[in-house]
Image (cartoon, rainbow, N blue to C red; front, side):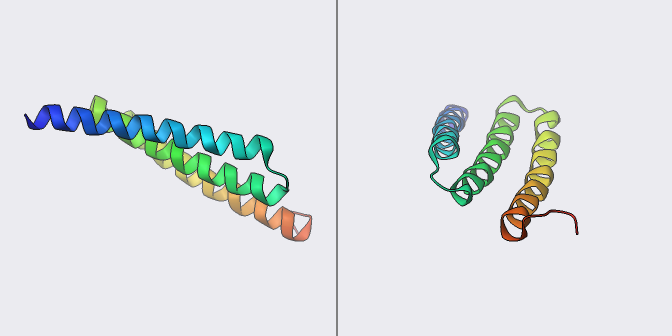
Length: 93
């Protein structure tokens, strides 16, 4: 019984995260300002990271956990670089 509940919960989580990624892509495409697009990219990388974690739990593979860590680090650096570029107009001083 608990395996069926876990399978259903992970399936629901994957569907919800896929819908969230779709909403983030919509914000990236339709964002009226650059700040909206940065928020969309930030949301998209967090959603992708969580989707990889849920998929790793479902398949019991450590590859997805390592990929989620890489996505998290690169996404953070990209968000900081985009925010600095929008604030000052340059990334490297």
